Length: 181
Image 1 (cartoon, helix red, strand yellow):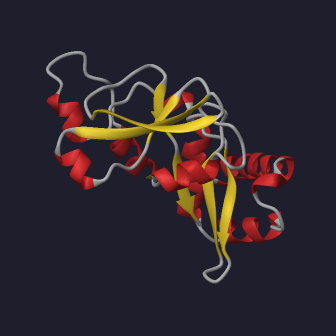
Image 2: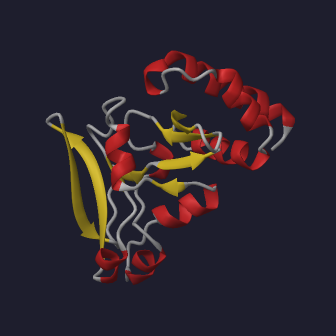
């Protein structure tokens, strides 16, 4: 990551961190920043999360390992990651009207992982996300083998998990990612 882009990114992350202490009570930005500065690949991944509208923030810590968990905390599924099907197999199975990319491929290229259902539900404990959009989540192999994929959203104050064909895509469905630093 280039030095000139690193400082604005760190400033954005710091500002978001300090404005949302309810997401990471008891954590100090200085510890997060120290870990980030020692990991250029993590900063590059966070820059991609930021550039696609994810608004990444710290949502957890593994104190024993000394790691921090970042997650997309944008109110809605990140705008730069919508209108994608679930994975490469789903993308290639479409005969026409293919989307530009898949959630699994985009996440891998960004250096992040799709949220699991448990991570998605935990994220909803620190805010209300995807009240107008939805987000693909990691799908169990048994479901994927049958052609399906899972996504979640929040409606009526409740978090829902749904299924769809992995080849489907919608303008309001994207994906949220996580990164352990």
